[in-house]
Length: 193
Image 1 (cartoon, rainbow, N blue to C red):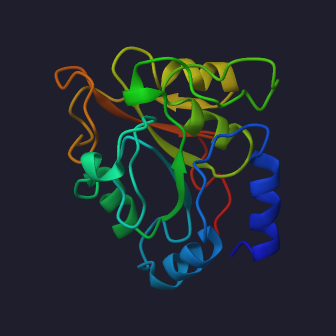
Image 2 (cartoon, rainbow, N blue to C red):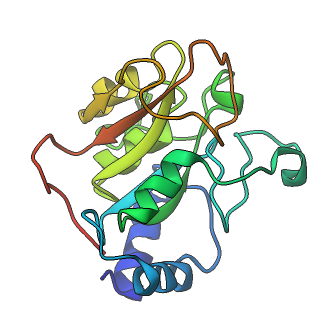
């Protein structure tokens, strides 16, 4: 499990990248999550979640300034599925506003002067920075594969409908696809808490 000092270093390392949404009490939440994680095939796998996915215990802003109560909803099916398999959610990652508009504040960890790609840029940057080995993103046009390519990580955009979009704030429901960003393709590759 990552210690409090390791999480403090992670927060410090993320300061110039800005891939993670700010979260007071992240260390305490992660400790509780690890102790409650079921003994599934992904036990202890650290996963970050794009901020258009609803996640129990954290607000969803979708990169907007709307009141979080306006955007509240039940936990995304993909998040619940990962949790039931034992994964531990690191937290929310920065998204462009409603996964569409102007780029967010996230920078490319490979070169801070460069963009990290599209709306799943926070997820791609979190993986590229080594904060987690896996992150959830979404793609309507190129928002998983482009940030993956820009940040030098693996992006997987499955067939439409393969992973449920329930609990994800939609952009274009007939195109939206839940995708994954990973540090590598090796089975079990990556760090656990």
